[in-house]
Length: 443
Ligand code: NIG
Ligand code: FE
Image (cartoon, rainbow, N blue to C red; front, side, top):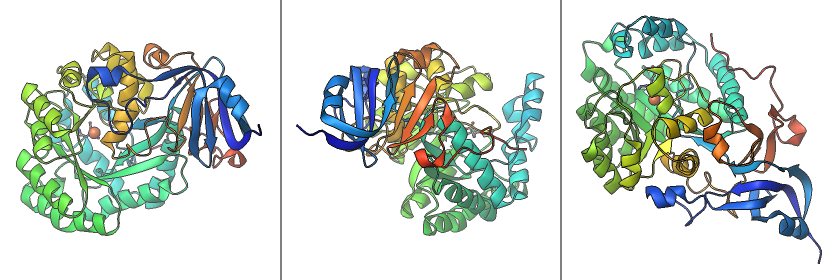
């Protein structure tokens, strides 16, 4: 029988981890989150950017004639990772504040004194859009080398109509032709800017009446997020903003209960937000509310470590309650300067008590649900876009076991090999070609 021509065969993998039990949508509860559907000795056939078949390597080698092969012997193949919570649109690192915190100042004290998010906003306001675009392209290459093929990216260091729109426009420009999928989130309500310190209501009005309509009209974001926290926005202000966003077709996310239980998770449930994020302080009532409403809890363990937060998210209780728990890096210059999702997965196990299987689900399938991308990302399934990560390790367990190590050897995105042997591929192989240096450079 003639073998069917396809574009790519990823073959002889020690494991193909499909994370595809039970079809689309997130995995809720421990049984579902632990069911990874592993094909030992597996292969993935890819044609026209999509998965054509998944199965035993020998059978697929007989059935298909691939134009390109990727030998995954001794490797685990996973779905491309989805980083469901990042703040990459910044113009300067904040290593100075890190050093201050190491000497005893707290994150909240620094923010209250005009540092933190406000310091980032000051620099971003004076930064040209093309500088932001170049920075973002470097970030995209950097996260890709760590296996992330779908990236949620928030604005939020603008804090004025002009600078928030500039941030989202930079994201759009950088995302065009990028080797990853970007899900933009408008986070104008990240902090009350200095010039509105005595007129909070005025800033909330600007977010609601100016920013949200312009963001929606320009189709610049999929989601609207609010930092609901002491020192940032109250639950009431959060509700006002997210209701306005919903009227303009933007789906909701909430930065909730980062420092304490301020009712943020329950609020996210009441507002039918897609996700609630951070959740270090969330108690049983908030967890029950999220489970009932189907809100995706997005937990950010690197932030807890980096800010030395005492209260850790009750990840196990969330899983047991039936919540589709996701994990993300929170990549940003203030509270989590890493974009290494494997480190997040490792902390998900050692710090939050999740299993190696649950954290794989949490950075793929459930993270896809958190960004509204269940239909195209987070699983290896026939007919879905071929976003794959090949780990230089024989089992998915290594993802959380080899703490902080980047094990990503190859990345396939939309059927194209965009990372090979831990390097960006030249354009003819599908990549746009490596930039001079792939470090994330910000001033
Ligand atoms: O998710 N919590 C609010 N926002 C970010 C921190 C942003 C910053 O410090 O620059 C976070 O941790
Ligand atoms: Fe955040």
